[in-house]
Length: 156
Image 1 (spheres, helix red, strand yellow):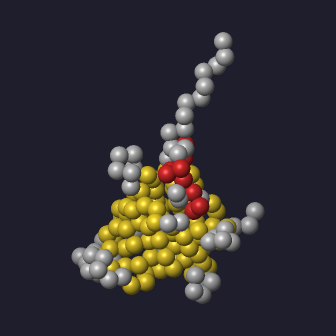
Image 2 (cartoon, one colour):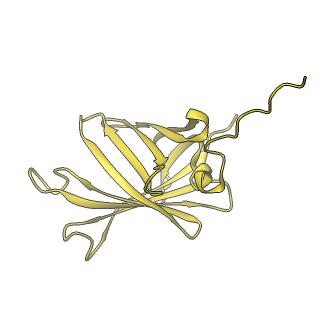
Image 3 (cartoon, rainbow, N blue to C red):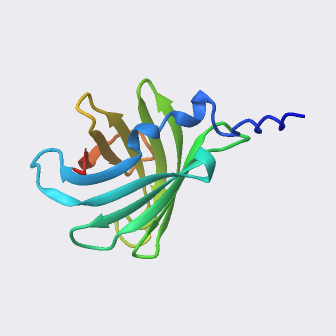
């Protein structure tokens, strides 16, 4: 008898691949100044069901995130854990060819003043990825730029 066929890959469907463009080893630079801000390793994990980020900035605390497509809500979720001990829960999903995730960041506007942060990840034609962040102090009515990074593939 022939061996049984392999089980289907649970997270192999197209909707699970919406953020695969971010997977890689990256040098992260300020989009405006081109100055290096840090390094980031983005890895596919758990059979393609999750993406783990390890962020190592040039200065300040680093952090890590786990991003996944929630099996029930069909929304993308990210849990960010900063080296400062804070956790931010983001959610969202694909918008065109980008990924947009939004969440409240504790004390971002000062002690006791949480702010809404929206991150947009965009694949560029040259293989880099832009991650632009905006912040809102009025629950998303208005937005101001917060950060703007370009992830450039590391050589080798």
